[in-house]
Image (tube, rainbow, N blue to C red; front, top):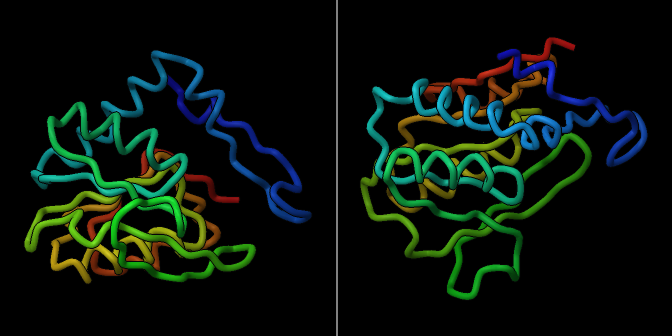
Length: 172
């Protein structure tokens, strides 16, 4: 199945000059969603993660589905004020501003094997912030996976030295 054909580009969202890659048409197709989750699982079959970490909101979609498929736990990374317990946090740069993410302080065991998942890699700000929190918790990042990577934004450069895999690549 051609997963890329199910992506939609929305110009000038969330602000002028940004071409937003909308994954919702792919999510609406049950067979495509299943293939995307299966392909992500296959891409990281060799790293034997113990837990998936994913940032809100669309990262939750693939993160929880992948955790279920692999039979492992899931840790949510959220915006400030959304998690009820003590958190660690990181502020990072996006392609169109800055943001802050939080994770429960006790969400990861020391030396846990973590697979970080998100829907899309753009400039790498969100995911590098998430990776930073995982490492600060004393866990090991064994892989970082995406449905889509926007190659022209070079976000992968912020993830140097990590096992990064993307199912789909958009060159421009």
